[in-house]
Image 1 (cartoon, rainbow, N blue to C red):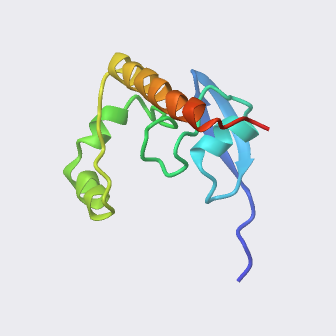
Image 2 (cartoon, helix red, strand yellow):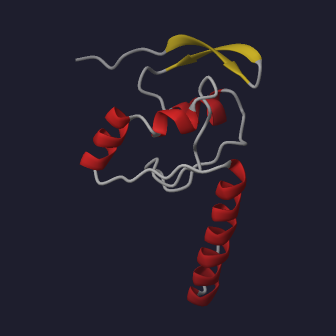
Length: 112
């Protein structure tokens, strides 16, 4: 079976309407970063678990995370979503950077 061709996708990003041609299975993260050059959204764990790649869709990130159907599906995969305010999330990221930065320094890991 042939792989699906990229399709035009229309969306509003930061209040501006855009159209991009993307593969139907492309991650929103990749469309934002690669296709649109919007590198503010970051990839963390690569699995969608840490929240670094979170985006608001119609302003509804926190609400959807409380939907019982979604929580059940996530629980079935062993994922326990945590929701927070932007300030709490920023504090969490700061703690993670500090924690993992120390691990990297102690291990002597160097970037190529």
